[in-house]
Image (tube, rainbow, N blue to C red):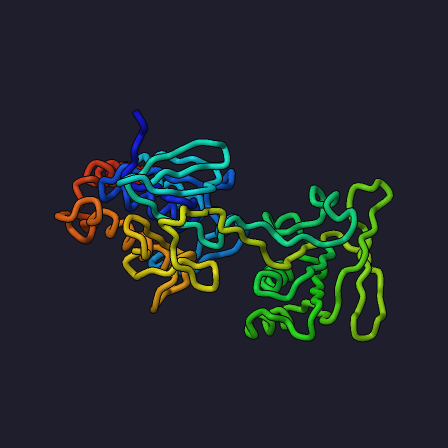
Length: 350
């Protein structure tokens, strides 16, 4: 007998993780499928960036925020699968059949798409032999600031991520240089001004053209850059190279023609603020969903997730309340609340 879920969430980023929590809150049998080995989505790319835009929450590092999201998502013990890529979804009668790249089939009464920007992979530096330095001092994300203390750093890229990293690293590094192929940086003007004030050296119309290894051939020691305007080049000794050229994205999910969804810009699923898409039984939340009045921030992601799960609940049970009960009054939390309060009282008495 096949194991049938009330809802299967595709995607394990913030939208998917909060959806898993909220669907458990609403008493739905839940499965979450994530293509990557780790849960957390795009936030994993910036584990040491501070997140400020979660209501009522003090600034929190991305890595810690992901841990908290995962812990919250597991509150009602959903089934969670990682390293599992969904390839194809079709519908037979009242059930959706979800096929994965592993040849597995999963069965669900509804689908909640929370795939965000899709499967994200960084755009690599297109220089011969660059990949061999990825295990040493060529980076496509900044996992730990500690590594860059008192280092000579060059950052290739001119977008928000590149300039944010330049700003964050400038107080601890020996020197930070940003090179960018175009005439003007594409990052926010305020962030660029902050970088300049922090002493970041910015060189536009400039690209990295050559990487030269150290004597042991284990890491990059020299970087050669060329200015496209003057055709002049220079070679500089460095300690660390950061490449921020953006990310490739792959939606990863295909649908049977009978349940194909409307898309905007050939990528985002068109729907409603309630999380409903054009096909009954398929819902969406987070960055992958577009509708009038969309808020493209974490606060919007959480509202998307709650709205989508509430729509799923009433889709499966038309007589159910449209909204979940406030957590402080919800019987599901009584025992958990009591345990937390008792621990706090014990801690306060010490």
